[in-house]
Amino acid sequence: MSDHSGKIVVVTGAAGTLGRAATEYFANAGATLALLDVAAIDGPHYARQCDLTDADACREAVAAIATDVGPIDVLANIAGGFAMGEAVHETSADTWRHMMDLNAHTVLNMARAVVPGMLERRSGRIVNVGAPPGNHGVAQLGAYSVSKGAVIRLTEAMAAELREQGINVNCVLPTIIDTPPNREAMPDADFDKWVKPEALAKVIGFLASSDADPIHGAALPVSGLS
Image 1 (cartoon, rainbow, N blue to C red):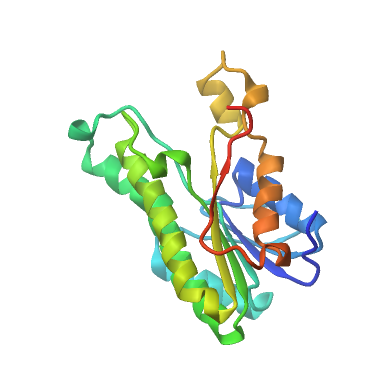
Image 2 (image 1 turned 60 degrees about the horizontal axis):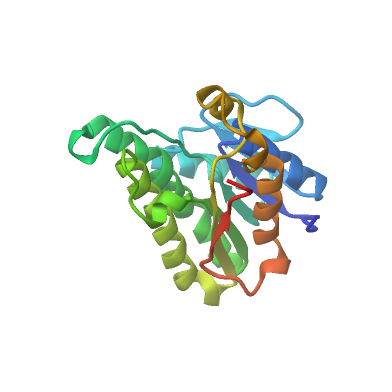
């Protein structure tokens, strides 16, 4: 486990399965947590409800964290979503907007809110969550593929812009994560081959640590056995 003692870590999408796993990982690694999600979050850590698709709400939440908790050292952009079933020519405006909002705009909105503070201190770590379909189009996953592709390209662009300023930006590309909704959707699958949330949280924690100092703009596959 990487050491995050004394670090203030923001986890978005903290109410979800991966968000909870990341929260537990960083807490065990000594970090102080600030949790954001559109849903209410109970527990011992600082938490705020925030619509991460709303740029103003993100700025307000980050300003509150800076006041109530302190300057942000690590941003784990875990919020996101998945949808499939429509061919590209059948993709509705609502589906397109929903995927771009959940996956791309959440990353962009949090970057706008968090990066200025990191630039002032010339220090910071940002880890985003992409997906393998972001690297190539997949049938019935057009909108999702584009939105996750945007996450990867944003990661690369931010890394190129910020690496000389002491800020590392990378992303992980998990395949199917072993979550209750995925098990319900695919009950006949071999769950042992899926990526465990706790294992993915460890990879995120590594990229957010000083051990990953030389790594900039990586899109790291985390595929388990799937």
